[in-house]
Amino acid sequence: MCGIIGYRGQRTAAPLIVKGLQRLEYRGYDSAGVAVVEKGKLRFHKRKGSIQDLIISMPELGGFRGIGHTRWATHGVPSEDNAHPHMDRSGSIAVVHNGIIENYIDIREELVKEGVKFRSETDTEVIPHLIAKYYDGSLKDAVERALKGLHGSFALAVIHSDEDVVVGARMDSPLIMAVGDGEVFLASDMPAVLEHTNRVVYLQNGDIVTIDPDGYRIWDGKGEEVHREEDVVDLNLEDAEKGGYSHFMLKEIFEQPYAVHKSLLGMPINGGPGRAYTGRYDSVKIVACGTSYHAGLVGKYIIGELSKMPVQVEMASEYRYSPHPKGNPLVILVTQSGETADTVAAAREARLRGRRTIAITNVVGSSITREVDHVVYTRAGIEIGVAASKTFTAQVLAFYIVALNLGMAGKTMNADDVREVKQHLRTLPRLVQKTLDTAPDIEKKAKMFKDASSAFFIGRNIHYPLALEGALKMKEISYLHAEGYPSGELKHGPLALITTETPVVAIAIRDHTYEKILGNMGEVSARGGPILAIGDERNHDLAKYSDEVLYMPYAPPIFSPILVGVVLQLLAYYVARDRGCEIDKPRNLAKSVTVE
Ligand code: AGP
Image (cartoon, rainbow, N blue to C red; front, side, top):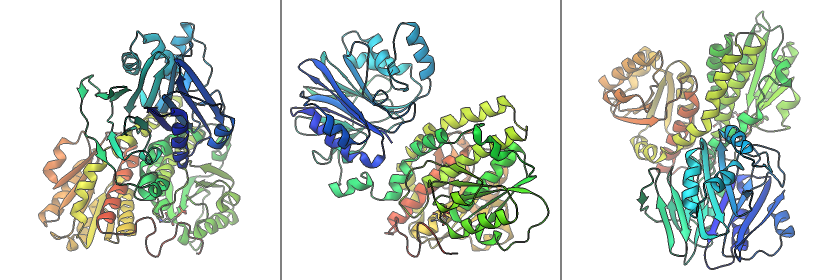
């Protein structure tokens, strides 16, 4: 995951920047680079590989302002050319970028027509060329103009050889400003700069900042100069291993925009593995445990909706011992670790039954990969917290890819259908980031559960598995007894347990079941059950049916499980934290369950 850093102050910039990059190493990267302005000239140094490689090969770089970057390849292979910083033609502007420029191909084509020669395959390189095009003596103005033409997500730091300023900008990618004594840093997150200062300004989407000899100034997305409060963060260097997050789980939840992006890039549609999906099977059987099972349940709706195939989902611990009726299903085994004994055993059983098998897993070379015919890797990055968060999201994502491949193989989807789904998938990293931006509101409303002894999660259709997952996450890390139900089932039994002391999370996304779930929420309210509804920003009427509402960005209902999942993870996290639980290592649980 890319990390960026910028510095302007009275100390030599390069060593501080390199140290900051080392602190960002935990994010994962495959190349790194630094650029500084020394005696009015831009100088840079980049390397594929580790920061240690960068340091060993680095010439002495002077100057009191500069930028640095760790890159995790997205557009273009890891290489020195593709590493940041990227420069304009004249070599006076340098840019580091974290995020994705969605419309870079169009911009690149325009710039090429204007005579620009590109040195890299990256989306980022359009930025310095655009800034150069608009530069007229003010780097801030040129950056502002360039950003107007960009779609996507970015955190940027920019320098120019002729101006004593570092410019930063933020849109849907993390960027903080850390304020020291006579010096100011920009960074992807606090660990990069913790040893110098713990005064921080959290930049907001749309913000542009300048850091010059007079200090720093901030403009918001409307171009108005604004004041943002400085915060003092209560962190020490040890926390840096968790990237400044209080728990690995929280860090992993917040890594999801990148996990989604990276997973999407890594999962081929209609590529060579297309063969894996063509065969004489008549249905799909999904087999998994725990959270992966819930991802499988979401997958059932996705595959059913997109590729119109009959799908069954079974717990891995049951599959082995279940009868095998006639038919020839494609068996999909889902396991983030790839080591879950029940799921690995189910894969063997499926093969014994003569089934074609596919594994969805996050761990390259794990046991399951040796037991199946084909592997779909999610690329969520290492997950340390026992409670699955980003790997769940990546598994759900994998099901869109599987569904597209099945749809194409079975000719139930044409090129236009596929294109439309792919377009929606590309927006997900940004929507996940926007969902994460609602964390302060989730944290506030989590208080509803602090002293409860029991809670219910309800949802319908594709959101029913999310109710199950929300309840699992809650009990796993907060030790609060929680049950997930299809909301229509409440009145067939569980309603007897609803009292004023039993909070209910109602997933109320506006789809064809929306009116029904509102009705079910009415049944809860009539018994005094406090309701926390989860809806999207268009559900203006939801407040009338609930005590509190968590609003997430709008996505078409088939894609909203990804966003609802993020909300439920944060909710469980904050409840667990408020109840003083251990979170990363819940009692009795293990990350990899290698016994049956
Ligand atoms: C998830 O929060 C749990 N820790 C657990 O249910 C987990 O999903 C299950 O054990 C399956 O693990 P796997 O994905 O590694 O197979």
